[in-house]
Length: 209
Ligand SMILES: O=C(O)CCC(=O)C(=O)O
Ligand SMILES: [Fe+2]
Image (cartoon, rainbow, N blue to C red; front, side, top):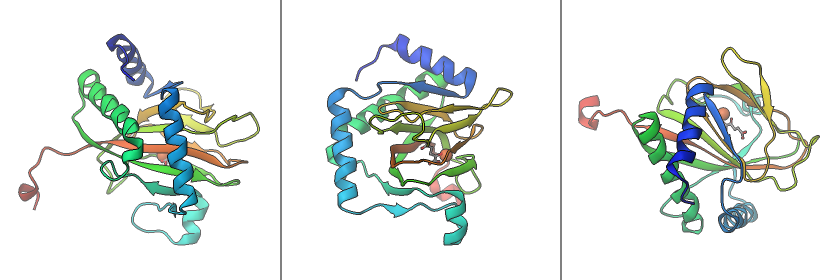
């Protein structure tokens, strides 16, 4: 969806001021449907894997921290959701243009939180993963209602903590390095596409040896 420069300027201003921004009705109807179909197809194929945490962590420890299952996307392979990647190209471009970031890539996965699962308070940037600059989530929960749980709880610096309901087609974007957040226990099956806009240090690989 081509959005106006004014629209993006407003969103990026909010992101700069609050460290997060919420954009509802993010995908158009056709692309939303394609994304749902793709998610359902991948679930049917049973390709989701238990999500990990950093480099280490036993199964039990991971379960106490996060209970989601993920499927990593591949822009070349997953042609069915090409429009989704085109949207992300636009977001990356606007972040570079309006927030003066030097993002060179992104990575996304489908995420499924089965009933009773959650993701404890954390930061998306951590040792070993310092190139995650902006976290992006698009929720795919049709008919989400109060009581379903699975809200995204955010802890903005110097402001009150608050909860963002994971409504269908809502996009949330936040600074991966500073915004602590958690996924409250979901009382139902919770779906999203989650990813990160990446900064590749401008260092040639051979210089980093
Ligand atoms: O799905 C969400 O609302 C947040 C997910 C999250 O924090 C993560 O995958 O790092
Ligand atoms: Fe996170």
